[in-house]
Structures are given as structure tokens and as C-alpha cells.
Image (cartoon, rainbow, N blue to C red; front, side):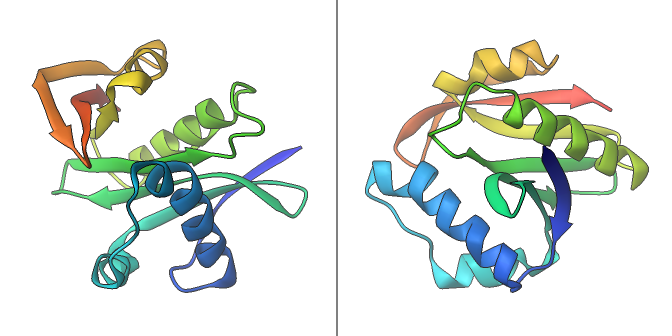
Length: 143
């Protein structure tokens, strides 16, 4: 059974999310994390999904301003993608953001992830752009 919760920056669970994010999002592109960028994540909300004690998915919420919060670094273990874990993480995160007073969720979706976010009622905003060497779209959803 999937249990989703926030994890504290710097905690053992946080470092587990870094390993998952690295494996799913960075290593395939020949990239790694900059330690300075990870230090900045202290101000972010870190969401993690666990199946029993095993981390299976995670994402990061970064406040942009009083109304907008950015969802980023969404990663689900590649052995179990397609089982609804990403959807549950996003729904949990939307509820958390709404409860904290945010009005809009914004994100930069890889071109391949756009259909996933469209199913969750996110809309493209603007033109395609390149980020971390791959095509992305800015997407938004009113909370």
C-alpha cells in the first residue's frame, strides 16, 4: 500500500529521494546534481511515496511566489511506472499546495511526460523550450 508523506531536507529519506531522482532523471542524460543546488532545496517541500518501507516515487515543490508553486523532479521507480504512483504523488502535492494557500501549480514537463500531465488537467503555456538537454513545456493548473 502506497503511503505518501513529506520528508525533511537532509534526512535519510531525503537522501533516498536524491538517489531515485539521480537514477531516473539525471544519469540517463549524463548529468548529476550540483551540491549547491541540493543545499538550496532546504526551502522546498519534499514529497515521497513508500510501499512498505521502500521508496517508490518522489517529487519536489518549490515556492515561486505567494500564489504559484512549482512541481519538479517527479520520479517513479522505473520497475513500477504505470501503476498510478505518479498520479497519487501529484494529487497529494496539489492538496498540500492548496492547503498552504497556493493558487496555481506550475511545472516544466519533459515532452514525453506532457500526456501524463494533460490527463491530470494541466495545460501547456507558451512554447516548447530546452532544459537539461531535452524538450520541455511549461504547464499550469489552477488549484
